[in-house]
Length: 424
Image (cartoon, rainbow, N blue to C red; front, side):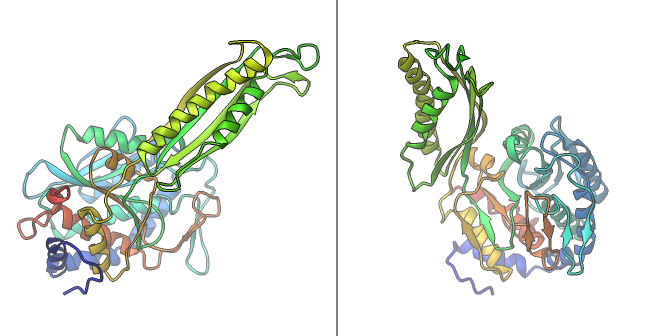
């Protein structure tokens, strides 16, 4: 019996305990640990295949090969280079649980110049953690299931997605879920991203990036001084955005992060572009903020034109570069309970962090229960050229993923899948 420190629904604790007492599940939890050296070598290989967002094709092709070599069925690479395959369940239900990590990194081609392992065993390479560790770990989970002949009741989908980082805007996860709609009913998703073996995310911080461009006639700073300035209009708008009253709960933020414009120090600016980042843990709050910002964009141009008596001369255009939806799940929902119960059962104290902007956003926005688990261990410098990864003890990632998958997808006829009950 597991001594759970928190209260969970009875069927969740019973299912986790039943799985832990099952011989082949116990063997699988041990096997992912035994496979760790092999898994880390695959992680190293994949980290050396550079994959900036929108340029993941080479890494995707290699990962597809690895999945096929391991025996995963129906491995597919879509036109965006998402890779996924299916481990069929015994129930032939047409339903599934998804396990995924992302292929892309924040780095440009040429940033990865090699890989080194220091005297402490730390692996140094840009992208070695985020998120190459995840796709290597997920491959190990599948290998354990395949080696031991463990069949879930519902199908399990193993996937590697593109364009999670930066302006990729998680379009890979979005298109993957859209594509799967024609093939299976996805009951729940598990993403692997972020450090540590205990922290997980189950809510979605929404994010919008705006590009706002003001244009005007420009002119000589002295002889055309009656002309309105695109920069002045942009500054008026930026000042209003800075004065927007934001809620502290749900946490909501906005920053004018880039200002680009003008053509000469002795000239009235013809153009000025603002880049703006807005985030919130609430989609409603984010939409309200977007409305207020649009009003500020228009007002900035209007005020500059009014000041110069030149109605309509400065114009403004604006567009969203990125639009990631916000969403939430109740802290006591069954998806979070199952994640915490599995984590506790493996001797780890679970830590649910608020917010989070991960591929889980896209599932939550579609009403699919989702969590994002950490990569399993100690790491440093993600999103920097100084990134390193400590492989010691990181099998906790694979063990949590495996146990949570079987909790949700079921174990053949021996353990009922809880994914069908997550919304109850």
